[in-house]
Length: 126
Image 1 (cartoon, helix red, strand yellow):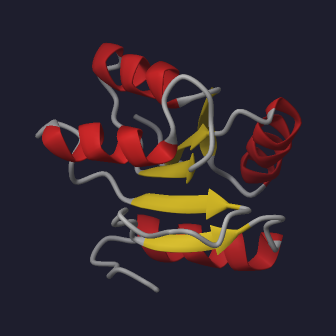
Image 2: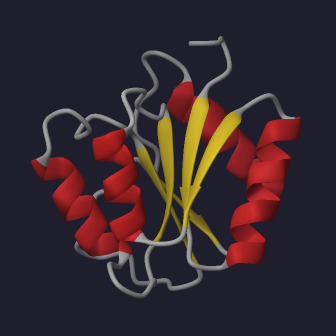
């Protein structure tokens, strides 16, 4: 594994997903891009390397962010991976993220949250 942190971006908006991937790559992160919760769970189960952080949209087809988070927390091998919810919805009830960033994301704030959550010993932010 290289020193660069790995961030999984789970969002059904391809343009946003790819733009965030490019932005984070520029900032020195490695990324894996998934179009929904089903693809993200599949990737988590197939890859040996775990992401250091998951950026998770809530409102997606096939499997939304709430269901993804529920299943993630039920799987011991990935339950401890921090999740930052990125959403345009202000409804973040019934989900327990490490942090929330509202869309459209302020990139400086997003980067700050990612750094906080991928630094060993980082705590949850509200």
